[in-house]
Amino acid sequence: MKHPRFQILILALIGLLLLTGCSTSVEESTQAVIAEGPVVEKTAEEPTKAPIDEPTVDPAVNSEPSYAEEIIIGIGRNLYYGQSQWHMIHGSLHVWEPLLYPDENLNPQPYLAESWESNEDLTAWTFKLKKGISFHDGSPLTAEVAVNNLMEIHENYTPLPTLDRMEVVDESTFTIYLTESTPALPDLLVYFQSAMLSPGTRDQEGTDQPVPYGTGPFQFVEYVDGERIVLERNENYWGEPPKVERIIYRYIPDAITRLQALQSGEIDAIADVGSIIPSQSEIVESDENLNLFTVDVLTTHYLFFNNDKPPFDNQILRQAVSLAIDRELIVNETVYGYGVPGTSLITQLAEKWVNPAASPAYDLAEAKALAQSVLGDERIQVTFVLHSGLANRWPYGEIAQIIQFALVDLGIDIEIQTVEGGTWNEMLANDEYDISMRPYTMSSGDPDDFMTYWARPEGIFNSKYSISYDDDQIEVLINQAVSEVDLATRKAYYDDIQAILIEQTPFTPIYHEVTLYAAKDTVFNLTLDAVFRPSLNTVYKLAE
Image (tube, rainbow, N blue to C red; front, side):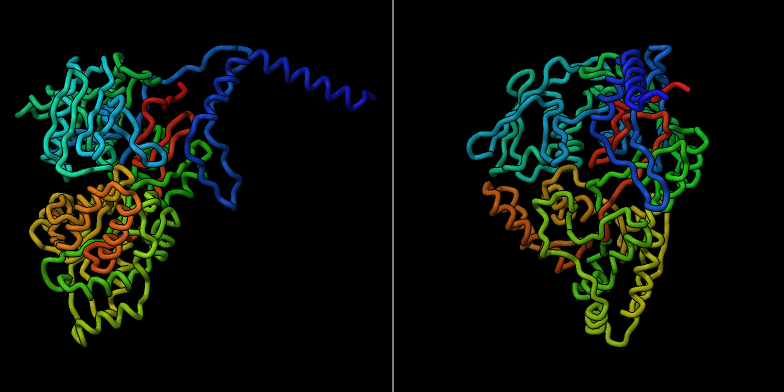
């Protein structure tokens, strides 16, 4: 009999020889593991799946794996907007790129902008662009082009609250002048708020399918209405080129059909916020050919009221409704725990700005008492209008039913109406609703991102959806917060704003999003970040 130590030595030598024969593959595999990515969801009942890892090349062949030319991603919404939106196409597609982008701590970082600096009192911010960057139509990214884009965004999308003017300094430098000190200006220019598109993008009036010319690693090739968006690799990209040649986004509005397409191999991944519903998580986890991932994103789902007409022009009745909502129950029952109860007005990921004292509570007894003080013995009927597209991506129907049941004891009877998106927009704009729901994603960690849309009288959602919330004290506090240089004082302003909004309840958070996404086990390096932008520049698929 051979000595056990001798056997161990032989096995070790064999392992060393095998590692030597495939050293290149092992090194690449190690690098893939080190790359930051999401964690695979695990269950206590079943063996956990291993994290996605790059497979080791067969030592006998000692060659690089063969990569597929194309990856097909299924989504539950249409990401091509054409002329209906100034940016034409969603930022997730990596066609256009921003000047600044948030890091994992939600701090703005350089993207197309190389650097920026302010004057002493923070009323002038000078930005320098990276040089040598061109749009897909061949035109250069210049300071003049950047200023034109920013002004269009300011006028048509997100107004900069203290903007005075913008001036071009030279070919790659421009300055933004402000009427007041604005310490968070870089936060107000991240992602969508500084999307860069070429001048040629705007010269397509009357075109049925205008082409968005960006600077990104992928360029727009084709859009088939209601079916797909085709992107191809930008061979002249200024950064590291993607590994995949073509990305196809398939629009599959039905969640069941979308998952079936992934299971059958018709698509390679489902990667967008709200594209895998939580009830499907067990199905994905039980499929040995699929990997399930989760990521906390900057999305919060809000219930909002029509503050402009009875019955919810009454603050006490709005408070009663909010107190009657069991947010923890909603998270457990409708999103299977893939979410965080809405205990903060803004996303809980913006931790340094959240006021923990301004948290919507659940108190059914208090809710009944408040409703009784307004309604007495009267019963009222209200209309809860849902957007069918949103209800197909999130369990808004189930949430509405939970709220409907909770409000019965308050003397409030809810009629739930689910309508298609265009009708939903029209009904809200025309005051033809009492309650509704929608998600909102902050682009950065700065609270003014949210306040600009929701709390200012001219805010897009406040005005567009007839929320019609207008409070002079809030407007003064927001203006003070935007211009306050001292961080602690600025935090105090936003604490006060959140406390007032929770008390007045023009809208209320229901839950904060945890997004699920999935991919076949031949797809690697696919991640989503806090604004659910997928890593199209690094993703790849092994050829089958």
